[in-house]
Image 1 (tube, rainbow, N blue to C red):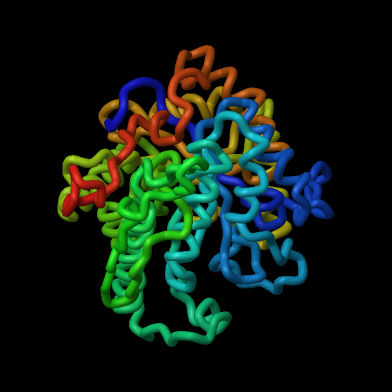
Image 2: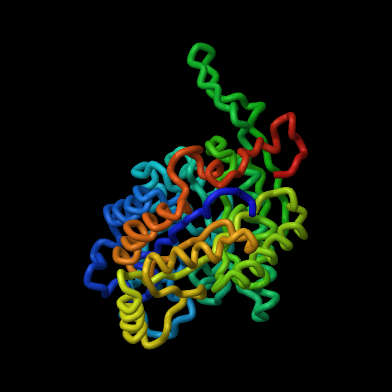
Length: 400
């Protein structure tokens, strides 16, 4: 465990819900999916409930972020979606508690742009920003940009993409450090706005990027916003161990949770980060209702419409909030090494409402829910110290 106390709770948001046909539910709002009001409402509901971390899914293609690997025409899917980082920047000022982490694709975007976008999110959220760093390894993804051809061999491709993603995160962290905390003077009397000696070139030169810096955005309130990785597959586990503050992993039961957490922390140690905390969150897709049979019926109906059972690559839970609370307890018991759970609502608003109105009160009843008291930053709530800029004189030449 990297922190004491109740498990951390995150919710992953994706359009009308994680099920690809969630938009067809009677209470869905498909006409509003591209509106700011929709996202303010959905994120606001999770924030008011006291959920610690809200992640926003994204992808490079027209298909919803939830549909990778589903072979069907696009015509009956909620095709097209907004940029997750821009959604996060819009909704963050309307929230008071939750950390907000959009997804970015490292393999087709520039780290300099992402560094300033997430730093901006940290400012507008008052220190509650994070980012999920993904890779896109398919030929259609690459063709959207037309700047690269990916290796045909899957093992070579994955190794290359995650190696690139690791460099990407290193550039992000260095750019966030490139302004010291007190670099801005803002002294009207002397006419000095910034202390130039406290801005630093990062001079990163690697296989994939050559970035001099410094950032054009001052150091974020958290110093370094939280970096999260979805650790699905051997290469992704290695990447999470080398680069992440939070790793999301699928786990069906305490045994698989313990195995996944152990693999991730061994990868962290192998990357030379043994002294650094690494939170492991179990990912679960949820269909919830007042009765277990009703939840299963909804799941079956949606899967029948889709023509195949949908999992999204993670364990799927169908049942009541009380039974889900039991699963949360099992997945995060001390022996597993899992410190939190991220829930993916299959449909919105129904399953998100079940989480906020029924699961959270049940966790509160069991004294297993973290209250909004205490630290206000996302790093603080996760028990992570605010890092000093590596370029500050006292730590010159130090690591992260």
